[in-house]
Image 1: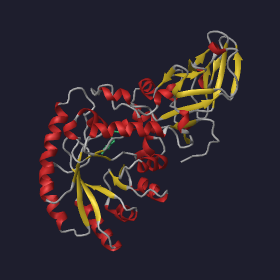
Image 2: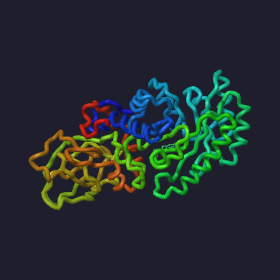
Image 3: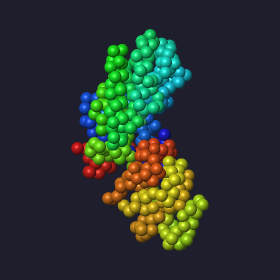
Image 4: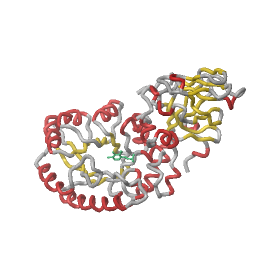
Length: 386
Ligand SMILES: Cc1ncc(COP(=O)(O)O)c(C=O)c1O
């Protein structure tokens, strides 16, 4: 991860907004413990800085997807409990034990391999049994839980500490499917408790916000912690109080007047309709600014919405700043995601242009874009914690 400030295209991370979002979600979760999901480089926000901040706020458990994400956090000195959410192969057992994680398990092969690796290391590994109550992805079927736990009882170097499941449709207006899933999971939890399992967890961000019956012992919000809504269908009005943690900004490195009918960038897919002032920014698909945004996005310059023109290239993109003639200069800030003056360009708006979701937009911001933590004072008064 590039954390230097040399690249002129940067993601600014507002940790005070993360604090606020965590508090909001904790209030919604009630007695359930919040286990933030920081996989995929904390949804593109920079996993180490996010993990440190959340641990400092008292989060005792953080969720990652893969063993290697856990290794990176351990090497950075993160000592929180790390839950590895994705299915793993038996061959990864040694790495999981070495990273001192609590892995999700959904095959007896991996459970047995973890048991062997833990015994070799002279330790006992807490694991979380993953049950598919309706996601249709990883996890054992609810009717297999009893037998699975019975086998695990004989694996003395693993301890099934948790039972978990995941929602596929909690972000939809119609909650019938999710409510049925909660009931199915509660049946699983009853069995698991008889086998000494301590913690049950199911809720993602949408579950935290819209399905209080799913909160159980712990909740695993991701997207909402970063201040982004899981979907436009969330009913809980508190979703409007979440504050986006990430802003994505660049600077103008070149400015040029071009005549009418000039072809711009590769393929000349854009031709100027009139004399045009074109700004170049050092942000392209190599930074995660999708090529599908070519002539298909508005960014902010001087508080004004200005269109991207021509193809987004690997390292550079062009912005029509004709509206700012006489008021724009080399070095000026260009906002791809964030606020400038009274205007906002959001990850949701970019996602809509791309036909995707805000999750993908922020997660795909490239590795060469430094994640720079904003000083607390950089947040406006409107964003102050209440
Ligand atoms: C198992 C699991 N739990 C929780 C989450 C967090 O989901 P969200 O970002 O929608 O809150 C994810 C993310 O995909 C996940 O895979």
